[in-house]
Length: 415
Ligand code: DSN
Image (cartoon, rainbow, N blue to C red; front, side, top):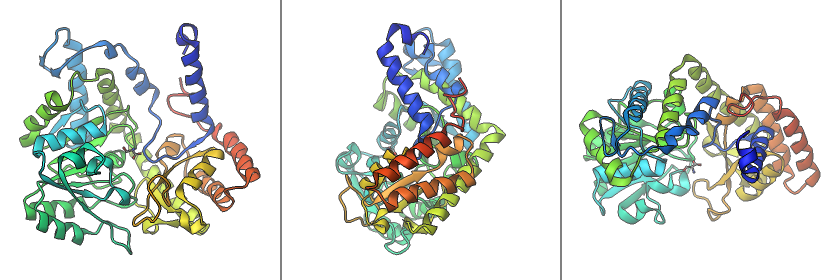
């Protein structure tokens, strides 16, 4: 911030405060991570200045010889990382990637199936307050009441009954493996296209810790900043036969000029994820989530579906007699940053929720391993067992701040 601290000290001070917050607290929001110094450098590069509507070799503006090199590099790395036939690296967010996928393969009013939002689905998978639910006829499938795992028989029954144009699989608050082969079988049987939104698990897929949707789905969308640890943005992958429809749906269908600074940062992140160390990272994320889950359950916190297969867990705060909102706020007071969520068949409204979503991707980027996760779990339990206790919260907060400072933060402490 050496330039900004002179030219705009007000903004520089806010950024400095945020850096300090990110160093001194434990970031456990399942969709967040720490981008590397390299990713941040490209995000702040001169490519932010350039317009490049179109695609490499076919732009609507001059001066794009280096933009073409950058975007082509990002495309090639994305294809290599996920073994995909075609990649579009222009979507600026997961919502826009999903919008482009629907635009490419469905007409307004067509039927699409997705996981119920309150059970772990995403806003863009058919919520009535989102463009998806307003433009398309979404039919929601559910998780089983007992196991709290996606009920594939429910998916099959609904797909046979409603004959959707697209079946969307993937979730935003779902701790279990997504059964892509089973979804593909149902899509094939009912004549639907299969779309996998792997936003949460993309880093695990890249690292070999979750089955890849790429061989099974017609189209795969993902954000690039969650477990994949890249810049804010998204990516869409598909089979070659769908490439033209997808590209047209991204530009000019839903977006204008591509964000080349983000596309360059995606190229860096894909390069990082192609390196052998990323496999260790992905493995550690999953091991950390399992250790955290084990210690929390030992302390009497019920977890939806009884545990986790991936990077996140969804705690049922009713088991501690409090709401998700109360748990989130108490933990924030103790320097542990999570987010409240609904749990399947929740009786509380979404703004309050009974659940707490907790992820391990960001702490694993700080080199924390299973011993640290068990320690963090014990802090979480101390706070949730006495959410109104100021002394407990303050005590945990100072222990957490002291502990957290000892661990490096990519993009902050290495710059
Ligand atoms: N809000 C993101 C998440 O936290 O999972 C998804 O859009």
